[in-house]
Image (cartoon, rainbow, N blue to C red; front, side):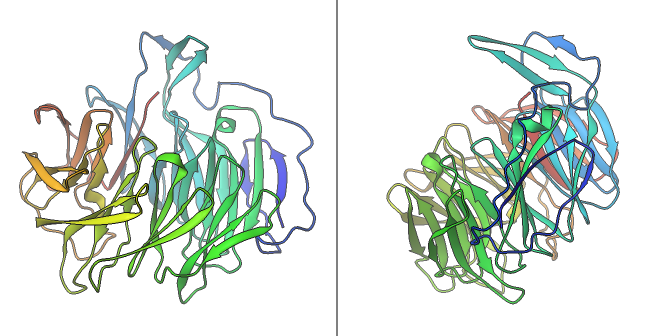
Length: 410
């Protein structure tokens, strides 16, 4: 069943969806379109000369907001039972997932576009009144102006236009995976929906549905499905125990790893490049020391031996298309995606040891335009690095150990 409804931005409880996503019965349409507004949670905005990007850092007690240029603290937002943060895709909001809720942080920076120009504003960051309760909040995917929330505990999927986060009402679409699992869903610009296939025991692949909920394709050749990314031309990739599965231009392509084992479980992509950077685990008993470059134009994979260990939070793509990896040696290693060669390395922090559990804090790498942001959990610092020169352009100490990082453009 697919449900469409308009709801005000109050604390929302996600409705129970009683049929799987392939059902075409009882399609309900929202009564009215939400009126435009740009107030969101922020009040008394100040106009700025240019867009003001901001960084969000999660820590044990909430989310710290920093100015992306200076790394000055803007706000520290208390959040109980925080699990993860991710940019919502509208340049203004961040999805804040707790153990039972998807919430939204207005980062207090945005641009009102007026054709050939825009007006830029800043305000005090704060949590909005919008929230979706979930049994087990999990993957969040933003694409084509929509954001999709996946509840691992129920298989319920909630989506809405990202612009509605700055409006007085949110037009919500609700549907569900066939069975609850640790899954993911994404909506494409043509209205098609891609939903992972799995249950509590395993994950096997992807199914594609049209806008009315009719299944139009599936591929179950992806054992152990985990991790997703979107590349140029809306190529959607998920990792598998033995490679990756890509959906592009209405077709599935399985790219098998060149070695066995060759598990892929984390990926980074950008709409500006057909190449997706992934991790690559060739030995289940050792750490990660190789990455894969997946070209979604040629449907090919190149494995790069780094010679240094890293973690799943150490991957990023630069604005110039280069792949970036933060190694346990404390350096950012830059990979030319065309040749698969490491072209340069920038020392940023002291050497560190990868933690045994993925839940434990570890250094993170995040890229915004031509600047890389590195969190240093050993010294509770954030470092901004110019990716062109390798120079450190800003450093700040924060009051808590950083756990994860994301950003908005303003």
